Image (tube, rainbow, N blue to C red; front, top):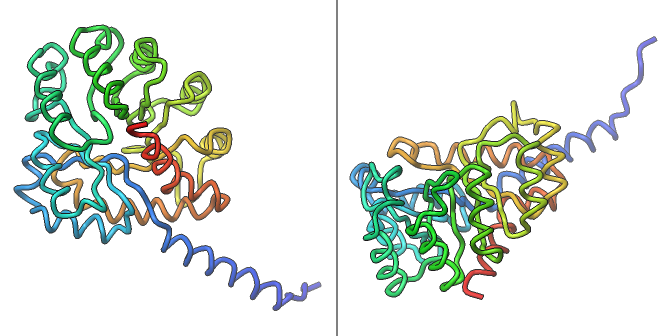
Length: 275
């Protein structure tokens, strides 16, 4: 027997879907992981870079660069959009050597005294790197200015940062490239640890959020942020696409949770900077 279709119910479902998509399209985002290094501003001038960020519908972009000149170029044009983050790299190629260079501390100290920054990073550090004098001084600078650390690090390094300063504010870049099973105990242990989802895509496939990741988001609704990670100049062409993709999978989550990940968690972190 052919079942009758309840047209009223069908229309309601379709309208709800359209409404959800419309809401997702307008969902403001904070991108917590943007770089604008020297090779990027040569290809994408500052005015064009700001246009791209605005086209993505961003409330804020956390921007760091090698050297800091790139961040300052964007902040000068759009201070209401750009959240400056101070990177310890003055040029590419310092990822594995910066923690041995004492001059980095002087550079960071001079910049922090002169300009506004919400954080230090993104920097790369693994395991015992955190115990080196340069890293310890970076942690001390973040404590002095009450700004966050944006660490591309393994779980061991994150633990060592908090051992040095239990009150540190830390964004774990790429969520450490850990699985939900590896991320959960870290977020449970460290209430001042946030995870960005930059360069991660396994949490959503075809617009559907993976069940393990959704359970993690629901367990720690105030701890995740979005990020594109424009670590090469070509990644700037992906900023708008990434924002659209993020809105698609966020639209499948409960509204409050989606808003937290989209922008509220980043705003809550910013509210603690300098306090």
